[in-house]
Length: 565
Image 1: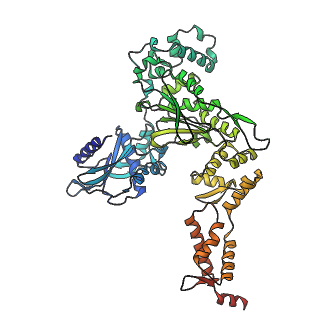
Image 2: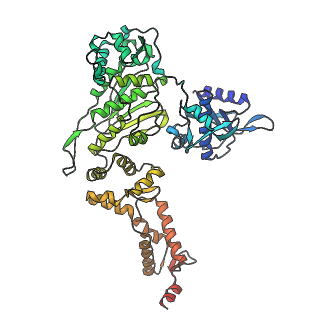
Image 3: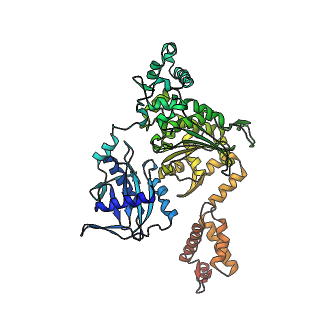
């Protein structure tokens, strides 16, 4: 929205002079509890869904004076730094269903006061939005748990609007590309061998109906996306396009091309643009092949076709394929990731329950463009595993799905772990990949990894265990493991005592200089200093050392004499 539109929207909310299920005002003069913010996000998102509106609003810097039944503009200092304010999008996404987050966060200067307007999207059809595992709603102005009837009402919504199923009234078979139709016939016969002996006898209209591209001979948006003539793209508001972009590793553009309908042919053209060169391994050992293609062809096509199938075409945005030279590919499309998490799709190997473009997905399945049994993404993970490459990365922020496919070994140590631990399941590898990338793991995942003896360390600072590292016989990897593990507390306390004994009296700075470099590499500087503080406190409480009035540490002679006695 433009500034004028935002201010106009604020005035509309203020003129209503009251809160309701989809509008909430908060004074929030300086701070606001993050958990409460998340609860309001869940509640307002769910209520927007139940009321059939596109979004709801949470406004900071406005006080509802219930006694006088009026709204007062007070202004807010909540997260004055714009970058910190906008970071709330990720912070909220980390704890919500499907990583749904604010559509936008606006800062508005209104009558000399700073007002913050949080635009909260409606919960997706069939999917109530939870915050930190709990569903919230509203009873009038009150924040409450979403009741079971409302949860089921959202989950059982059957009137899901399918953009891809809409009929294009003025379009006819003559507006379709003949080459695209011919390719569609071949792919349909391949996917549906039971029709192979009769498909040639079908006229175009019957084929389109059989392949579920048309409805009773009427041209759907799905049919036009896949088979429509490029010069007739105006039927789709010229919004269905794929942009291929070649970049250097430092993000400089080198080349690009934009592809339009019919997408059944455009997929092949994009595929040809991607330079899928050979990757040669530098690692020694028979477990590593001499060379492989950087990207399994199936992985490229599946990732691109998934973007086509799940694009939110109402946004009128392009699907993007960005190729970073000899390094990685990024596929992105608009729309939330409906299954919720990639781990659920890969590890459970389960088909999706909901589709944004159900009609389009079914047609693409019939034309052998995608799989709908939950196996497509899992296959991509397995192809990466066979190459000893990192697992694919998925980013669901900003209302998009961004899939990154890496075409080389990034971490040679992790590649050796995969090569030498061939008994690891794909589920185990996906979780270990998150650990080596230092990505967040859930409490359930952490407990599983620890139970399998795959990790060591404390919560928030875990690392790959000796069991995983040992089979590689790699000195650098073992050195990193020892650096991560460090030594036990008794060892460091003995070092401190010996240091004080030699020095006579020791400063905290001197003790820090001795101990900090030797503590586990997974600890932050602040955590290391806290460890040293705890060591000193434990030694003082046990009577081993004492602190002088000048803040220096020395041995407790009384304790020494007592022990000798």
